[in-house]
Image 1 (cartoon, rainbow, N blue to C red):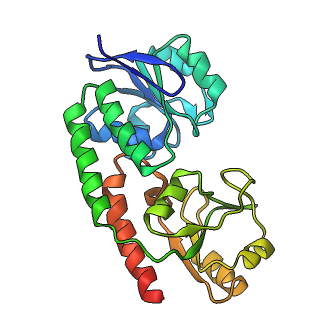
Image 2: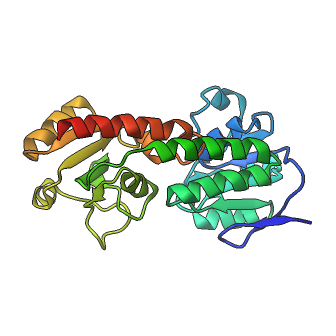
Amino acid sequence: MDELTDPHGHVIPLGRRPQRIVSTVPSQTELLAHLGLEDQLAGITAYCVHPQHLLKQKTVIGGTKDLQIERIRTLQPDLIIGNREENIKEQMELLAREFPVWISDVKTVDDALDMIVKVGKLTATEKRSCEIHQKIQAERNKLQPLPPLKVAYFIWKEPYMLAGPDTFIGNILQECGLKNIAPAGKGRYPEISLEELQQLKPDLVLLSSEPWSFTAKDAHFMAGQIHKTLVKIVDGALFSWYGSRMQTCFKYLQAFSEEVRLSY
């Protein structure tokens, strides 16, 4: 029998469609819906807000980092799909002792495309997953990279935090041709002060709409602190959701790149 092994060594047999899936990651929940598996979804997290109607129809099993294990047990899932960064290792290992668990590890666009195909194999929806993969790759091929402008991408405000190069967001910035200036050696999402940011002299500051919802007021304030720097609010989901939402990601990135190019 064919099988699929995740980065943690969990082995999942292939060949049948799971009927009671628990998804512990918002972007992968959306992917499962786009694969036509809404009826097979049994449990989702409180942050799985797309498609919006699922939160009213499915059992909510806590947050991505505080899963309600007992509630998951009552669902008796025949497949749990998680993610290495977004879920707590100890919780996922506990679940893996009782249920089939598959954990993705996504840091790049290539990782995300590979994940989409593998989820298709796990759920016997390979044809649809390959169609999504091909559509994303086609749009990706159209993207015209910017010059290597120095960029700081803010994900949080209290304290200020950046997305580092070794993240999916960092890879998306690289796809756009940009140079991520997040400080090295301070973790994947380093804290930064405005004084430190001024010393780095970014050409471009991006303020994300999520997880922190930066506002026009934030952008105006930041522009006053970092002179001769373009400050823009961007759609955080399209920079960070690594599932089927990537079907619209690269069109957005192309429009974003054109706006930045016009500003320089």
